[in-house]
Image (tube, rainbow, N blue to C red; front, top):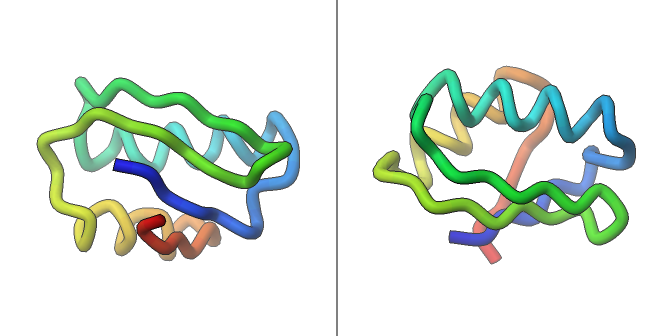
Length: 64
């Protein structure tokens, strides 16, 4: 799955995004790219659950 997160602009943001994703799926494999404002991940969680957690963390995401 790939997500586009416009608010993720730095390494600190990427850590917050990673924590939000891990709150839904602690075993997710996550690759953040703040420069491209994107996240690639392998997860068993639904995109809706991930988007809800990211929204709550202040990082609204869209599936790309």
